[in-house]
Length: 300
Image (cartoon, rainbow, N blue to C red; front, side, top):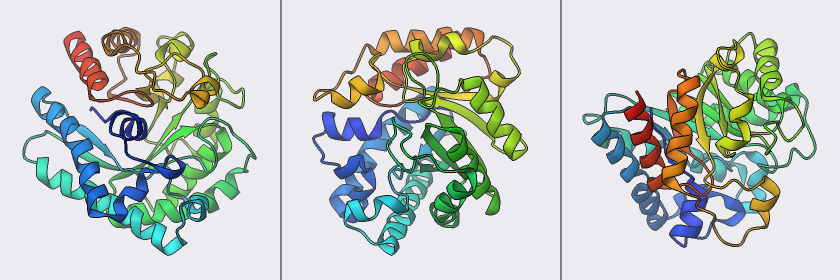
């Protein structure tokens, strides 16, 4: 299964589209914004069609949970409506390509309550459940096949999202981000984070992923054949080797080397063949996902 690249960085740096608070959800307020999102997603669907893979349509709702309404100049009802509009857009794209791809999955994307790189004030799992329940419920009711929590920085918030998804009986995926040492921003190892969320939720998450980190930052911590790594099914890596702190300070995009990134994914698959969901994150675009797909399909 392929998915897209770094939606927000592509729109900002490659297409010159302003995203207040790094929130692509605002584009759904206008016909022009909705058209721009369609133009972003279609080439990825074309790639999946040409290569004969399935595709996960990740909605542009990463920064669309309740706390972000006020900074975006919205009330909660308007934000809910934009979350629904995002899934409607995904449904339209799905209908457009359904006959051409073996499988398309619509995923409602959920981001962290706070900054994507810094844990900030940590919630307990119960508070995280209460906080994220509204967006999870809206996305599921709108027709998302599953929800995916991307760029998770800590165990408690990830656990809460799994509980929130369970309340409305929608499959859920948890994707952690890691620093250059392969650990979560809280200092937890990736192994401990995955096993802790599974222990707290009875293994309810459909699978886990890593996103918003370069393969060099986490490849060494993936133990070949270890039980916990079998729960890791997807990678959405950054194009850049820079740390989160360095990326935050950048004024220009570091797009890295798409071909090299594809080879790094291929090397990961050589030891982690359970990885079947492949896409990109910050700094990546269609070039990177194409290189990844071609390298990994050739490997398969």
